[in-house]
Image (cartoon, rainbow, N blue to C red):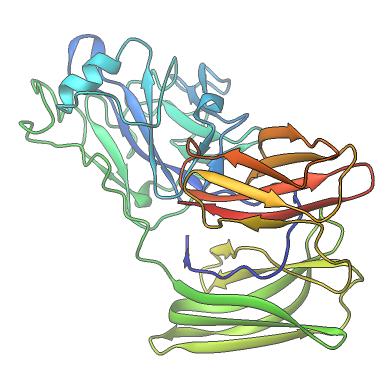
Length: 377
């Protein structure tokens, strides 16, 4: 996933889910009693709401799911985080083997991945398997991806892939951890938490949109580019479906800063939302953050204290009968709701418990719906 630095311009409404990027970064079949600890490590490229997600296993060549662990309890996990999915009753063995006092902050306990190095593991996002280790319907014993009593770890800067590619993985080989009591003293050490997604193809330093009479002007800059083929400019005005409105060639591989510009000749009345789909020569792609411009309709409310660490305040000029204020994750999950009393002209939210990241505050009633992005420090 490309590393994105961005500026947001204008006001945003809630949009349907934006593509998330999570992959299986490692799998471990342990040497302790009962094969413990058995676990999978996931890496979160982009802040992700795990509602409806699961880790699944297909054992001994089965074409049906053998075990599944729901990841919903994780909630929203910020980009750059590692998630550990540990087999039931093996979290103590996990801590012992890796010399940990407590489990990592993003940990889930469940029946999957109860596997033995010859089984398939998939990451399921609620509708399909978006990443996979192994080949469903094939028992891995004797295959190139076999690692019983050992481990497999993902190569840096790879991406989720529903088609298994063993070339993306480093493997310890079978029986590599036999006789080991801790990872630090083992001759074959599992590289826990070492997946690197930072060697990225493009560094986007600025992306904004401005009104130029009756047209929208998009500008963006890159500090560095690697194998950057082109950018597709996508637009939405109904708050639901993006469509392509143009394409701009990239700079390939370049170090100097580059600037790009695109003019949208026919924006819609009201709020218009834009994002970039950056595509590499190998067809890997990533979406930028969303930026917006409004061709009418003045803002209903404004924020005070953004970015915010503890207290987020919104305020407006006139009483808002029947309105509600909502905090929404970047992926669309509803996190908090407050009813607005007619006589008040401001409302505070305590956001101190939210993970660091980007969110929306939305104010809506039967007559309007508007949201503004904010950053939690």
